[in-house]
Image (cartoon, rainbow, N blue to C red; front, side):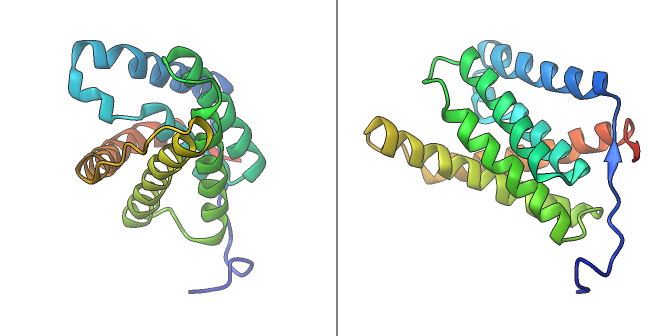
Length: 170
């Protein structure tokens, strides 16, 4: 694998309206979909949007700030404590942007592997934050964790293909 400095890095942009509409729709669906479909609690649409735009922009600062902002809004809409999703999603956004600089993630399998790893990281970070900050017993369910990773990774590939239509080179 060539050194990251030796290969050209493609940076993409989208219209700001596209970015905010995607984040808004993800947050709306995240809030209201579990009411209609109980199994939808396994989905994390805002996280997938943060991962996509972090990979596309390739900016660690953008990934961190966008992840924190979307995570804090998700916290405000949920019944949990304010800041939990903000911290975990900001870290996932940072790691996604860092990985997009280090590795070639234009291919389907690269995106799938990284998305799976980031969804797993986000889930484990949320479990750890609940245990450390709230002193609550860990809610670690291995089958739920595997289901979350598989379902979100499959959904991410569909969402990523749809969002790729709106990107343009920077």
